[in-house]
Image 1 (spheres, rainbow, N blue to C red):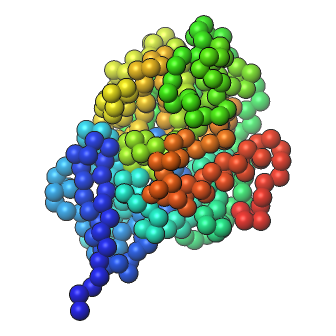
Image 2 (cartoon, one colour):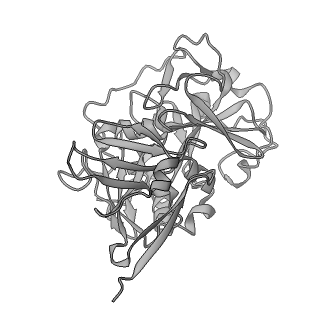
Image 3 (cartoon, rainbow, N blue to C red):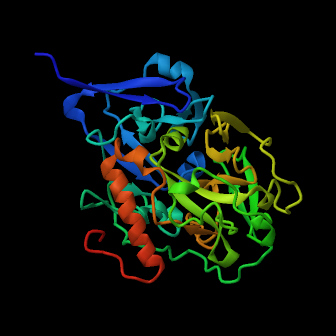
Length: 378
């Protein structure tokens, strides 16, 4: 009797790389993992990497291997991404010559997650210093997600809103501070200045079609610069779940900081002005109104640059090296009222989408001193 199989399709943003995952139906849902290590953040540009562990018998097709670009992520891991649009497609793990090879697929490339991939836990939270994205996704389908400082499947668990004892206290914020951002291979490197009066660009908020669905951003007729928050001391940041961002990165969500290009320089001293032509940065025109940028060597998601607002660029938060932690909370004010473009996500990953939305609400309570609902998140 033939074994019943199930096929799931996967693709990059530009669709030049497409493949199918055909496995025995009994092997679904696949084991999903969320990694928060520094290397994964800087390799992806996202606050965390969402991956699915493939069964031991899985091997990528030769057609897929011929199209992807490899990046030696670590001694035991190779990452493969699209050389045209930068989408991280999958990873190959091996402990050494002759050892078993294991493959992990980037979940953002998969056409459907619901009933296909089941998240097992958060891992390597210790690297974040502040909990990173693990505080924004604590429960899926009323089931708490294990939170571990190192691996994802064993060892101690960390409490909600864990803070590293080695996290430095950042009390004295200086206008001269500059925040370093870089990809995993360091082929892309730049610095961000603290917001100042010039960050408002001396103009009314310009028309941006992306703004209309965000309830906490001033209307387009407002003179307020919506990208500047917290009394002019922080940049606005948010979580986007649109299909384009998901496919560009290969992860379920992309976290963006909205930064005026006047506040970005290519050197730590602030002397070399911003440009989109430096280092290993590559461009991909993802729509008629926007260009995306990624590292041509390691595939890290770097910028979203919209034609309609050329002076404010979206910076991938996973690239930031804020001393206080991955969420860069002395630099960024996180928008929690909505998951941007959630309508793209809910049809393919409903449980994850609802989980992030609930996590954003609980994070908002925590930030403003209200006790979170810890009964489900402990």
